[in-house]
Every structure is written in C-alpha cells, then in structure tokens.
Image (cartoon, rainbow, N blue to C red; front, side):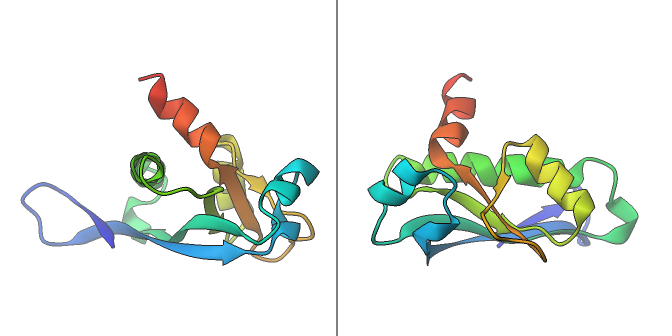
Length: 128
C-alpha cells in the first residue's frame, strides 16, 4: 500500500494499492489482443485509490494515479503483463480515468473494469 501524507504530519490524506490478477480475455477491447493473450490477460490492478473527503478535488487523486502508473511502468521492465486495470466507482472517477487513457472493458456497466494497456503507460514515461 502506498500512502499520501503531508510532510511532517501523521494523518493519511490518501492511499492506493497494487496487485496482479489474471483477467478473461473477453475484457480486452481489440480482437488481436484477445488472440495474443488467449490464456488470460495478466493485469496490474490499482485495487484501491482513495482520498480523504477534505482533500478531494485538490488533484491528490491524480497525483497518486500518476504515481501508480509510474510504478507500473517500472514493474513492466521486469514483468510481462497486458496493462493496468482498476474499477471505477462512479461517473466522476470514470471521467478521470478516461482522461488518463483508460477504456471501459466490453460489457461493463456498474463499477466498470477499466484498462490501460502497458505500452500506453510506457509511452508516457519513456518520453520523459
């Protein structure tokens, strides 16, 4: 688990966690991706990404998402996986994740699974 705190303060402002999981390939958008990963698509999940209510709408969630994507990029140098995934809890977070390039998996509605292919993540950080 990764925690956001203000310098010199004990209180947690937000947190996120990462884990690996194998997802059915019918959740991948492109047929060629489903073919390439026909035995299952390994995903690095952002299991939780939360910001304490008083600190919401101050870009802390975006900062933590960027940090999670950077860590995903670092992991991808040693471990092969299809992409980064998460579940969106509401329309507001779906909009945020869409702006970062995540797409809703096929046939997902309530708390949709959203996936960002790792090559898209790597493109972001390889330019830096």
